[in-house]
Image (cartoon, rainbow, N blue to C red):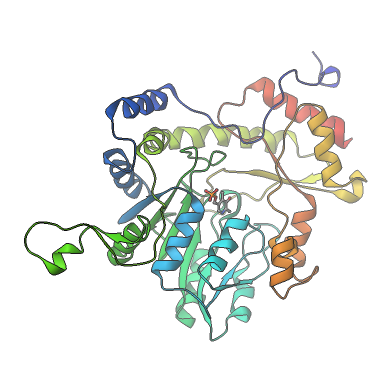
Length: 389
Ligand SMILES: *Cc1c(COP(=O)(O)O)cnc(C)c1O
């Protein structure tokens, strides 16, 4: 059947479809039968395997990427009066974590091509209240970490990465998760490695890892009794106002198999990526930047920038037309400073971050996962051709 004759799909192609292996399903069932459902041996094993996979010394599994970010900022001692420099082109979780430890997000605009925070503009945002830089590796492309680390070193700042898009990414021979002071991953259902909901905090700092473990179980220290008694343990002691942020063994069961399949999954997504690059080049859109040499892209999101002048419609119109043809797409992101909450609480108006806003108006993410069939891909490409020509 010729491309022009394609009909709308009978089953819509969902954006961000998770792929769950039979081995992962068996592992979950094994856990359900084991009688241990909460944080336990499988979570501890997942932490160890994850740490080793990303080259981190310590890993703490959490119930979300947000929780990992919140824990990172808490153990770093960031709180009221502090400022954290981050990108406006991100999911709300990034800035919410900053706000919810009592600190203030300070946005710095992104580079249009990489979509990542522009290191050249970070220095101008540093004040005597700045405590950390919180970069987000957009779509799975690592930020210019050497440049960001140099700014951080110059001003005595911490670097805390939001690596929600970047599990499996590498930068100059090192893996994301081992690059900076603290790194937060998300295993939410649409991410490259998923546990349904979940996340991970990695760090080389043992004290921070231990603190994160305590904060993640309501601030209860199981070891605190040792300070008082050399005899029988007494009940755990609350040593901080923590929260419940742990991962369960049911989730870790998925994680163990997702982690084992990560390299193959990335290879599958790379094939889809190459097909898109090869087949969409003549359409009125800009293709995503690829990684410079020495950098491995995690291939989380394939995001095109629509040429709105040539198309003559808005991105949202284009998405609706694609949806009518059975093709789901995503938007990553409408920049945070124009969202209601951040527009009313931070001192930025429309126009404050022209490059993030430029991306926000025309960005559209295409389906990208390792189980897209040739027919699925042909459907996406032909729907784009129909809608954009
Ligand atoms: C998914 C995501 C998070 C965290 O998501 P959770 O739903 O809390 O796991 C944080 N930052 C970015 C950029 C994300 O895409």
